[in-house]
Image (cartoon, rainbow, N blue to C red; front, side, top):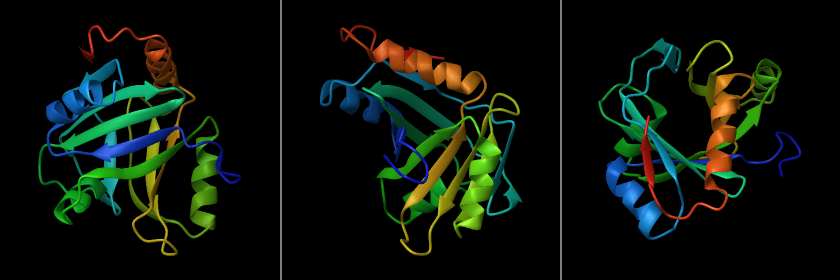
Length: 174
């Protein structure tokens, strides 16, 4: 539990091959079921203040209360995911905190000196997210995500689907 932001709710992994990553998480880790969005439809997205339109695939599943997110960027559009891959990395890229008071948390992150890397919106005005970096600890990326709308309902559905999962139908394509 973070005394500043609450519990870490998600670990986000940037991967080169989302299908291979799904097989690993299902077969080697036993985590699922997964909910895969092969082409994410973003309302808007900005990387370091510039409008962008990255091509992303994401998959979500829960292990207990912790959501695991797999992200594959399918193009060279500037994003923090692309920067991570271009630096030779693959794997855990961020931890996420969720809030129903998104704007207050966003403003607080800026006031605390975190630098905004990229941000966007999915599924309407209550679907914002932002990724922040800290100069005090380079390489540590924090995502904040607004769960006051439909995204929060989806995340709750995914968490409930993992409870007692029997291993059948490991991937649901949305």
